[in-house]
Image (tube, rainbow, N blue to C red):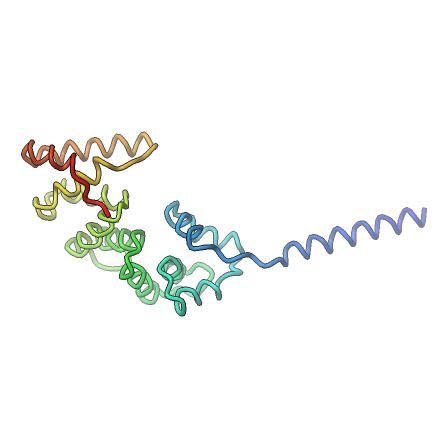
Length: 208
């Protein structure tokens, strides 16, 4: 009986030590491609939380010292929403702007969206259009859709309609709801342009 008792004690101790060791294993920092995929799926903040905020210092270093746009975007979002760090909206927006200035499509789209809906700042449609047009030209579908909705409301210049029509016409999605929405937006844009301009837009690519 004593031997059996000692065996269970040893088994329990070993299992506990293994669990502790497993929990103490360092989380690997994301590669740039991994982070970009997380951002595109809007899972970047939840992943930081799932990783128990272990990567905060690494993320800040890559944003602040390495000047990596994907990490500037992530760090900016973390600051703006107070995820694993003290909330600091102005500083968060600063890092989002840094990412956008380096041409990160997701950063450009997010700032355009924020200026459109007035998130963290006052509504500024003109600035929203600038960011969304740039993101749309980088093949960001969310920006293209939002831009089309703004054009539908008669914002922006008709001279920009053909480029956006082309971008949406050549866009790819396997989501049926999004596909239907794009079709509706294309129909609206087409009604605002001569048919020969529409035909030319279908043949021309306006994305980078």
